[in-house]
Image (tube, rainbow, N blue to C red):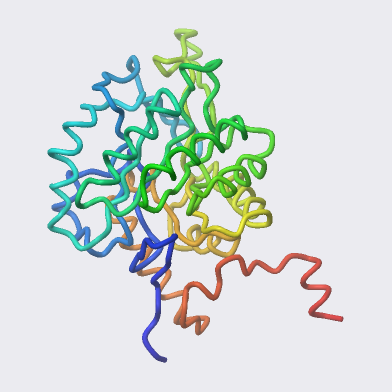
Length: 312
């Protein structure tokens, strides 16, 4: 069999394979464990304009099928990120996607313009799942009109490929996805964590200092697979699947549902080699089923209507 092609494209962003870390679940601590050059992209933790201490502790708790976290985007601020974090990744040939979080539409645009013109950054992930502090406190990504305005404004200040990270905590993720595509987003991340809560029955207190947090891990994967499929039915831009990927089978499931690339988060806390093993597992799957190009199976799930057509 000829050489396998695992390379994928998100706008003008070229990835050697579809696997990358989820923001907040990756850092230089892993540098001694595996070669970052083997990843499709690197995505450091989301950055904010100003330094931020993060939420009250405890910030993480384990639950059946995953974990709840409420870190609060602890950050040293944009200047530190530009001066220290981005340059540290220049020794790798894997593209760096900068994930940013902001308090207003204008601040997203301001940060995107600065980061977009910083050497070493090849893509920007807009984390629009955080609260709009100048609005009514809802996440930017919960409102289609605000999501459109935000992406449109960012696209006006940078030529970098933009991946908009959607929140799953909405009635119709398709509506938000369409708005982001219409505004010019080059890709969509489906999706951030699902809002959750856990209570210690002995102390009668929340297990998370911020009371509520986001659940990640294998329990959420079927929900995310559903959302990837739904978004792929109404949008034509690439989707980055994110949520509950623990192994190669999970990643392939998301690709079949419509994801061009896949992010890995919680799995890396359990097994730091998870991303490398997932890449190897995808290669094994492609060899087994004689798939020469990973792009050939993106969105190729056979739904009942399609099966009926094939059988007719």
